[in-house]
Length: 140
Image (cartoon, rainbow, N blue to C red; front, side):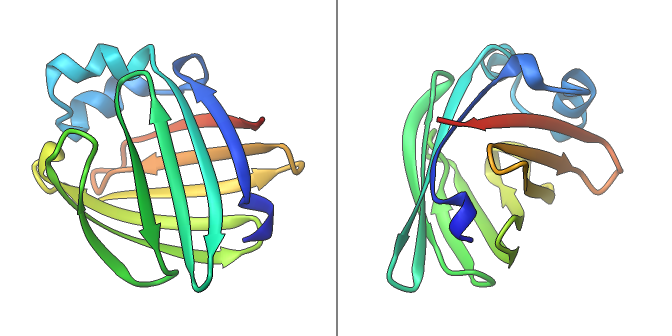
């Protein structure tokens, strides 16, 4: 987990397969374009037994998520919609998140974040139907 600690920044220009993913996921139409053009910064911090992920995005309000590896968290997304997620830290360079949210009509989404070369996170999001998209974040 130590390699995730710090700030990471990405934007929609790194998306692969975004349009198909957005359609299959049920993201509301008014947010599809906002997400496509968004700049996102994630900052991972350690707080005792917990991890914090501070998410800032040009697509909407900022949000801080607090979690323990392998434990489900019930929360709200930045738009106030209900959400549940479990993040499992599999290694110092890989974490897997399974989440469901009211915004996506409670469809399950699996997000795998892997650090490559120490300065890049490749994030792969996958829906149960098999539709995937990827996004890259670079260390700030």
